[in-house]
Image 1 (cartoon, rainbow, N blue to C red):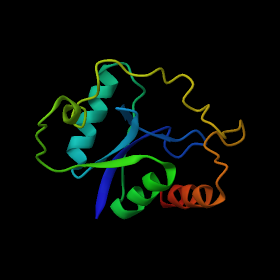
Image 2 (image 1 turned 45 degrees about the vertical axis):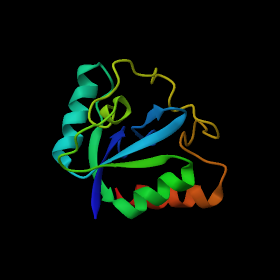
Image 3 (image 1 turned 90 degrees about the vertical axis):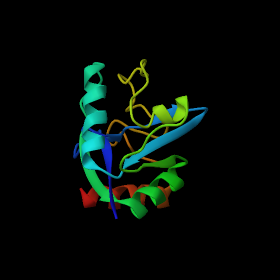
Length: 133
């Protein structure tokens, strides 16, 4: 089943996925509906955030990627209604965002490949996901 994720600089060497920090966890949103992902992207843009691209990817592949990267994958189902302030972040970004000017400087990244990872299996999986795009 495909899900929709928000990618920054899609298809480039500096591609990144939108995530949230929620109570010390890095959460990647997997939108069931493309329209919901596009609305969320529009809300980010309205906050002067870089404009993400909405990409459809296989849910199982994304959950595996998140698990291996130490992220939490959170499905945002069609018609989702939040029941808590934390769940509200699944349909609307926080009012304040982290500085994204240095997001490419992740641990293990290099100038040649800013998304590089020290774990060979994770790196191979990342490259496989890039091939799907």
